[in-house]
Length: 321
Image (cartoon, rainbow, N blue to C red; front, side):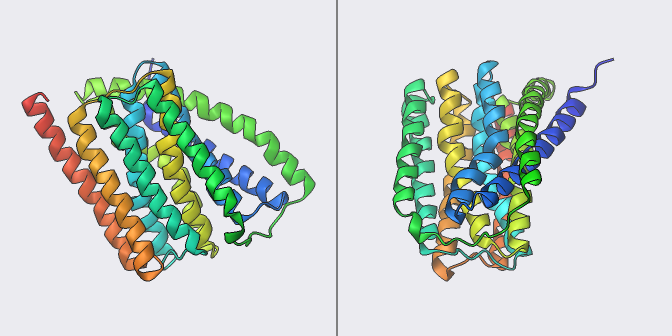
C-alpha cells in the first residue's frame, strides 16, 4: 500500500535534511583539515554544501517538467534564510557580528544579485536558458571578485581531525549526495501531488513546504556556528547561500527547462525577498551587527511573509489569477 503524498513529502524532507547536515559536517571537517580560510569555507564550501538540497530539488523539478517548484524553492529558501534562519541564529548568539567590513559589502552585493534575478524574470516573464547562463556567469564573476579580496577575510578556523576521520567524511560525501538525489526526487513528486490535491499552484508549494525543508541545513549550521562563537561563518554561509540559490541553483534549473510560474505569486514573493535582502544588509551596516532584537524583527518578517502569501493565495483562488 502506497503512503499518502503528505507522509512521503515529510519523510523525504527529513532524509533531505539529514543528508544535507551530513554534507555540511563532512565538508567542514575536510576544509579544516586542509587549513582553508574562513572566507573559502563560508562563502564557497559551506554555501555550496548547504545549498545542495535546493540545487538537487530544483534540478529534479526542472527535469521532471515542474520548473515553478524550482522558482518557488529558490525564493522561499532565500526568504527563510534571511528571516527565519538569521533571526534564530541572532537570538541564540545574542547578535550576529561580521568579522570583516567586507562581509557588509557582500551583503549589498547579495541585494544586487537577487534584484538581477527578479529583473530577468520580469523582463521575459520567465527565466530562460539565456538568463540561466547570465546568472551562472554572474556568480563566476562575483567569486573571482571575492578571491581578489580574500586577504580581507580572517582565518579563524584551526580545528582539524585525524586522518581516519577525514577518510570517513570523504567516504560519507558520495553516500550523502546519493541520499540527497533520491530524496529530492520524492520531494518533487510528492510535492506536485500535494499541490494538486490541495488545489495549490506548484510555486506556492515551493515557496513554503519545500523551501522550509531545504533551508534546515543552513539553520543547523548557523546555530552551531554562533554558539561556537563563529558569527563570521554564519553570516558568510547565509549571504553565500542566497547568492548561490539566486545564481547557480536557478541558473542550472533554467538551462534544463526555462522557468515559468504564476506571475502574480512571483511578483509578490520576489518583492518580499528583495525587501528582506535590503533589510538584512542595512541591519549589518547600521550597528555593525544584527542584534537579538533585530533577530526577533526578522522572525516577525517571516510570519508576515506567511500571512501575506496565504492571504494572496486565497485571492488567487477566488479570482482565478
